[in-house]
Length: 107
Image 1 (spheres, rainbow, N blue to C red):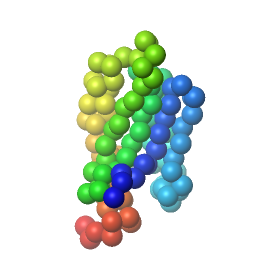
Image 2 (cartoon, helix red, strand yellow):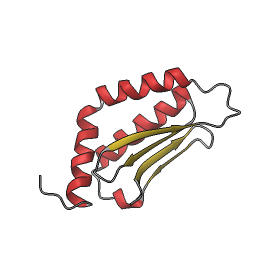
Image 3 (cartoon, helix red, strand yellow):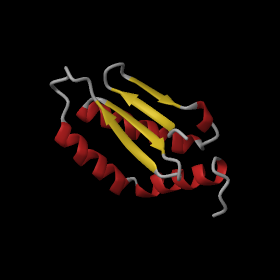
Image 4 (cartoon, rainbow, N blue to C red):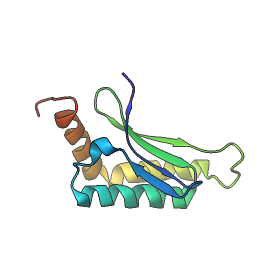
């Protein structure tokens, strides 16, 4: 089974995408996700993808154009760690949502 994309933010296209499967999320959660992801890509560049692994773990995938000399690779790693710490409650609630509504686990 492939990972399921929650959302993507790109500094190259200056676009944000939330997968339609997650339209049922509360507006406040959707807004917080958008702000977090867009600020991340504005800060360090590249493309940030949040996706769920098979077991429901939410992961951060960062990619960049190899010709993007402004991409801050070290800053990217530090920013992901910072977000995982400061947004822990949000990220854990998204994992729980995914496990209940998509994997049909009982919590």
